[in-house]
Image (cartoon, rainbow, N blue to C red; front, top):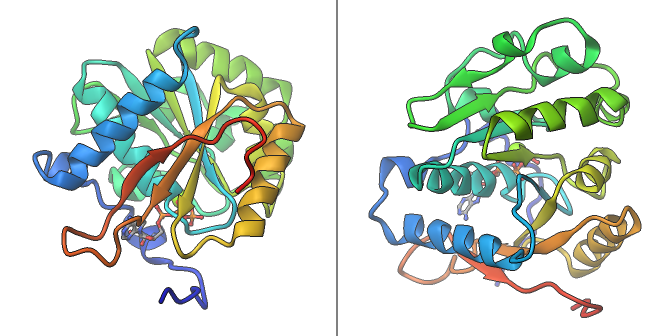
Length: 243
Ligand SMILES: Nc1ncnc2c1ncn2[C@@H]1O[C@H](COP(=O)(O)OP(=O)(O)OP(=O)(O)O)[C@@H](O)[C@H]1O
Ligand SMILES: [Mg+2]
């Protein structure tokens, strides 16, 4: 029924992801992203989330699509939102929002740029982005440095919400490092594409670093249905249930 992807989908690397929440905000898909937003808010009632990592078990599973669209729905609510492209291996945020990638996160972590040059306003009210910056030789080291903690503190002071578009969990340690430092982590799971053992492993890796796993988003949940292509279902992912 579902075919495993033979190779990575590089479309978003070239052109960015599709911002349906901006381009077609009244669509049912945009509505699903708003539902995802609400569910994330409700997943943490006792603590206000200021920084949220979006990751997945493997590459090209929809992290950027889901995180960027959910960020737009938050900005629409009037929250001041910053998307940080922490995927220094396959960055797409600068493409999606059509901003320069000359200065970004990698520069700030390597001390080769200043913060004002690394943040861009977008066409969307309340939404700013920090692109990855030039791809460094040592992303894990940079993301794991004390500088990253300082930067995250600065950013969460300056914005209502910092959305971190992270690399996949199972390939490199970057996402684990980020998840350990953010208030919450959301796992994007593409139905029919992600392999079960891989998702379980990703969850375990996140638990190892005591990430606050808020839940999982089932992406492409309705591929077969006539209503559309995107699926935004936010499912619980709690306790020891490792289905
Ligand atoms: N629900 C969906 N329906 C259809 N296409 C989708 C959906 N989610 C993502 N895609 C497409 O799949 C590709 C990968 O998505 P995306 O770039 O968001 O994934 P990613 O996990 O951020 O990938 P990477 O590991 O490269 O950062 C893109 O071409 C995107 O348009
Ligand atoms: Mg991505």
